[in-house]
Length: 137
Length: 137
DNA sequence: CATTAAATGTTATAATATAACATATGTAAT
DNA sequence: ATTACATATGTTATATTATAACATTTAATG
Image (tube, rainbow over all chains, first blue to last red; front, side):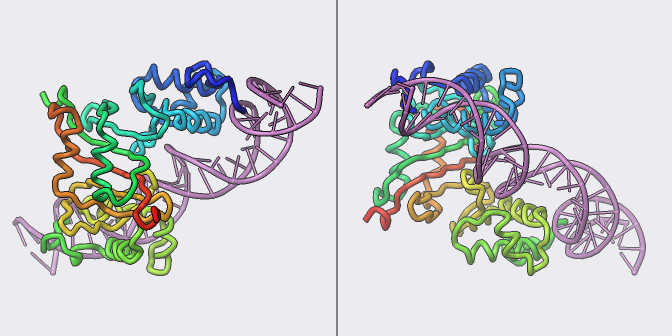
């Protein structure tokens, strides 16, 4: 399609992509695809595919991440998150709070784990199940 | 039930658990639940639940891990793998080879990422998508 | 305004996973 | 051995998550 390439701003998004992203940002927690569908049924989103297609695109743009072990989707809060589909989250097992990990060296750290530099790390998915500091009290 | 507690040896497993584990060990790669079901249909495994129940138990015992982003299951090859459901794998995007990561300090390394020690890491799931050294050639 | 790539709408269906409940089996206590 | 209990099994149905296929529309560009 080659829309106006105003970098990666929200103006570039299609209607569905925009309202899905807005819902995820408002939610501030991971949502399931069918929960998104239900929430947006009054905005013309009527079929699962409409949600999944918007999510696919948003993931490709790095604006949304999938929490694989929860089949859930969350808005990216790392403003500098590249469109690379990398994910690194902590998930509190008590209160379910999900936080994206900020660590500029994470790619290198995980790359070192891959296998002493003999393979090339392309992408990672890290899910840390924790008890968060509030729930530890 | 409290079967004979001969530690965690294979003798402790029920029939279904045993044949599911054997299939996974033989496969040496991640298998999907329904692929396991299909493979074992001649051994009396006739319904998805029988597979999922065996997998649940094997995962609990640390003998099998789930690759969340592939909805697949793989036999644990870390003989010292604790029954803690931690998973750390490299997955080659070219040849699909999946290897469990051996690193005795991985729990500490990932714990450090959690959030500078203010939360408690309980469990992790790490999936590194790589190009393996054979595929790099 | 014709072309093209991407997005949408829609129906159907595939793939993954669990609920619910009846029955059976292994273990341990009596 | 009989009971009590926890776990495992068998079975049917259904819930949840995700994609296929194809016709139509929309937006950017030459």
